[in-house]
Length: 309
Image 1 (cartoon, one colour):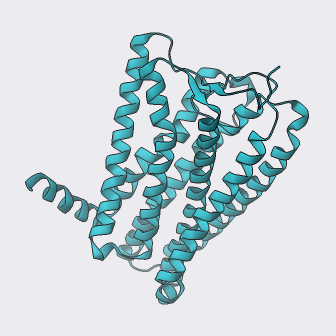
Image 2 (image 1 turned 45 degrees about the vertical axis):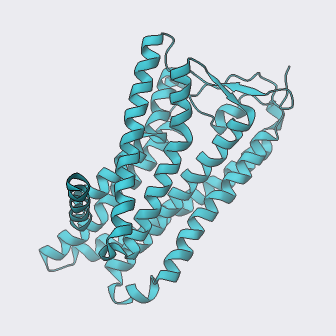
């Protein structure tokens, strides 16, 4: 049986066997990828160019757009190339890099969403202290902590996963390299180190989730006590996009990792993994731009400048 030293490449799960469907999937991935590039690129440009958007909320949104771009760019281009060239192969180093960057970017995004919940909490529950608690230095430190925690978590998991001996071949039952599917190829007695790392990550995830829930309980308590209907509407407009993004992120991840084994199948696994790994990067810009009037106004100006220039 091969081990990690003799495996030079992995074989990913193909979306289709016929050439026509492969080209259709390539076109679908290309459209989705271009939509993600356009949506997140517009948000990045709008926030960078409009000094009215140089606030903590938009600074964190800029970081979120960067993470979404990185996340979808880690997975989709390789899937597009495999569909276009009718291949399933990914090199050992390429697979390790894909695991590293995907875990890094997803972990950093979840940490950033937690930081954004804190930003909403301070803005609504402690508005008089907003400037002192969320100055430019504090925002930079929190964003750096989100990126750094994601990177350290990714290094831990990638090192543990790819140091395991591979005794079950090199066929990955997924359209991109993912830790649970790599672990299925390893020797069963070698799981313990990665399980310990997973317990550590789950503890962090639960901690962040509890923090987000407690923050929003406090936020809604304050909002519902506001005497002004306009104030309540403004507060909800600030919070609903963030809540929608968190709900999309958490629900798709839970659907992927907590679905019952009785309903598991390769085709269902592909669809569910597509939902949590690709869809958020496309949908997040739409969620944030639909209800944010300042961002919508800046995006309209930006689009008009591009059209008439």
